[in-house]
Every structure is written in structure tokens, then in C-alpha cells.
Image (cartoon, rainbow, N blue to C red; front, side, top):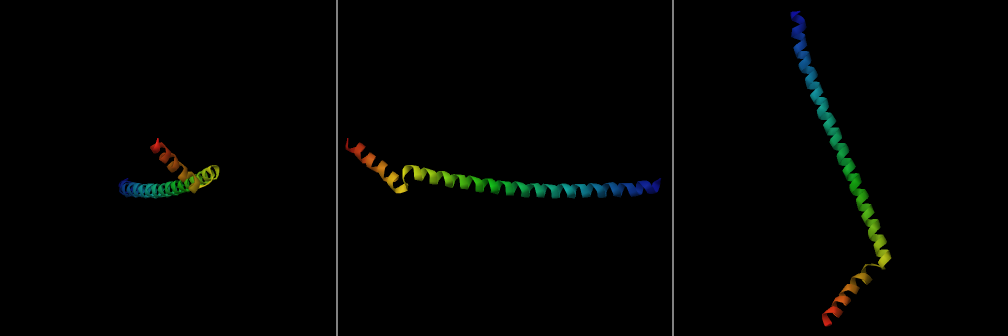
Length: 80
């Protein structure tokens, strides 16, 4: 009986250490997956933003034409 107790305690401690090491590895893996998911989401948002900007530019006829019109409107308002 004494031998079983003397083997049991180190065995329990070893199992606890392996469990903690496994949890640490699982946490690292989960963090890597979250980082990868965040990067993928960022890329999707950037692509959506680019597509929306392009659609908007096509709808208004380009950047240069639209940006000069408000300046003309401001000049007319100041004259009044």
C-alpha cells in the first residue's frame, strides 16, 4: 500500500503538468486561429471598401469631377 501512495502522488503531479501544458498549447492554437480569422476579416472589409469606392466613383463619374463641384457651389454661396 505504501508503494502505491508513493507512486500515485508523482503520477498525479505529472498528469497535472501535462494537462496544463496541453491547455497552454490549446490556448496558443486558439490565439493563432483568432489572429488568422481577424486578418481574413480585415482583408474582406478592405476588399468590400475598395469595391464600394469603385462603385461610388463610377456612379458619380470619377473623383475629379465631383470634388470640383462643391467648391464651385461654395463660391456662389459666398457671392450671395
